[in-house]
Length: 147
Image (tube, rainbow, N blue to C red; front, side, top):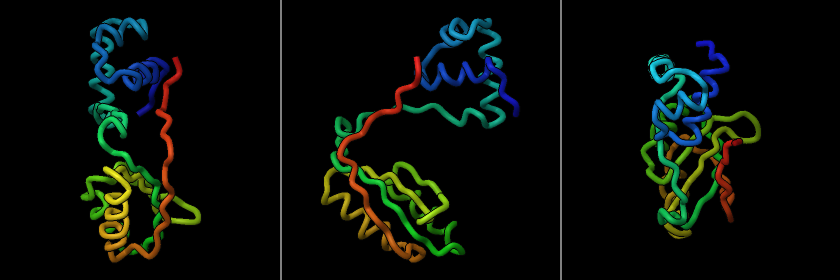
């Protein structure tokens, strides 16, 4: 689906505030409320907009330990490894990447002991995982959309 400048502007409004009303969206991008509604509906139906979400501060949410975990995996077993990773509640994001390693995870846990459990007992227990490296996050900086 080709997105025009108005579609992209609507997405930027929703990225800043997924709860924005159709009236707010319409005013921000200078179209009618009905036009905004039709465009959002079309982008949802075509899979451009896949959902709406809430961002939380990990520490305030009780997740005091965070890390990026890199994995090298056996390529033929990637699908099974991905399915198992998706069932680990502490794994917030999974990316299949190219380069020095195959997979990059964002893991958020209650504390360092819990983070250790997730990495050593859950992630490394997946048969397709050959190696892992854990990069502790000391401080997060939220993605702040341009005004």
